[in-house]
Amino acid sequence: MTTASAPGKVILIGEHAVVYGRPALAVPVSDLRARVRVEEGSETGVRLRAAQIDFDAWLHEMDEGHPLRRAVDLTLEALQLDSPPSLELEVDSDLPIAAGLGSGAAVTIAIMRGLGAHYGRELPPSEQSTLAFEVEKLHHGTPSGIDNTVIAYGQPVSLIRGADPRLLQLGAPFCLVLGDTGESSPTARAVAGVRQRREQDPKRYEALFDEIADLAIQAREALQEGQIDRLGPLLDRNQSCLEQLGVSTERLEKLIDAARAGGALGAKLSGAGLGGIMLALVEPSRSADVAAALRSAGAAGVYETEVRP
Ligand code: PMV
Image 1 (cartoon, rainbow, N blue to C red):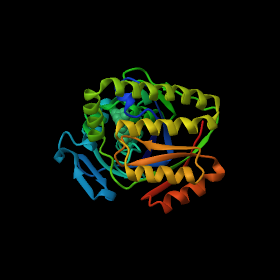
Image 2: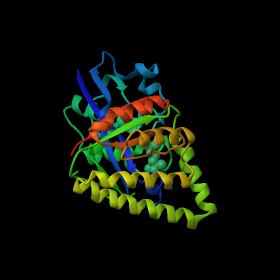
Image 3: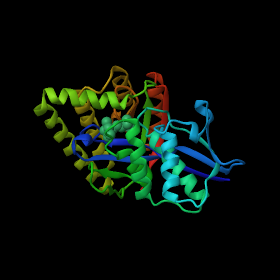
């Protein structure tokens, strides 16, 4: 039996603007992971189970466009096996689905790593990322590629769509508290909404994307120099841009306000918005207070995590 895992992720700065060629920063969430267990099966074929979502199916009976099937098919193709596989795969995950934490890409990459380990041939991060990007396209048509990149490399990244990712060396660790609204975040709908509004007012939207790009560049420098205090106000300003893009909600803002009142250095929604999670940057000594403030404000899930160099 082999096991493997992959972390979740959060976008620190730059969601939505990244779809329009601006840089975005994302970091892995190592404490929340998707895991896979791979065992040799007793009959030919691949059986996939995910007890948490009541899922149990043979690969060949699944729709070819099913993300789990695609993840397995692409990996087995890349591994170039000599004989048809006979496998049992069991997937489980700490990551809430459709919350902005990269659950889909984490499961895909955990599967790739599990199969790679089972056959004694780990695919390199760049190949994991490229293959996972193919699966990401099934979740929403035009992904920027940020989820597959940060999760495959397991390191903070600065990404410009279509360009090679820039891996970041953090100058210092920092702590985040994540609050889940409990409302699922419809990435495709949020992205389509921004596209539609941008078509009606391109000048205003391009200016907002430029402002976000400027925040991402400043945040990248602050992270690399380990000046975590500088990051807080940049997160707050990014939230204001996201509100103007029309992807924030009352529930997100209630959690963001609660985190700020609880002592966060800065807070914003993270991911596509219209639901999903928010993140708060905190001093380690304030993490528990901010987590408590989020719970009192009705967060459906609260996660404290440290991002390490
Ligand atoms: O909520 P997520 O993790 O799917 O993030 C979406 C981020 C967007 O910038 C809105 C879309 C993208 O493809 O980058």
